Length: 105
Image (cartoon, rainbow, N blue to C red; front, side):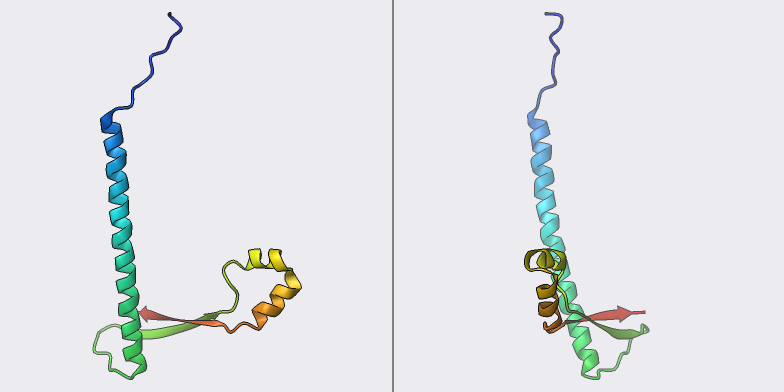
């Protein structure tokens, strides 16, 4: 009997903490998604106004940075599946995706 170890118990408090943290995490994830969507919408709106020639009445310098990506983020996996030569042909014949980013200085 002396060799038996008494183990800690799992309590309702432990489980309530886990449940509460999961719920809080979900709420924060939803809020972050909403904030990200709002940010993209506002940035697109300002970029559109700048392109249309609107006057910048702020004290900040606003510019539009343009970039493009031709290859997918999963390029390595793509090459692995269809071979380097075929992947290169497909990627080089793919229209690059263009991105515009608002820069505020």
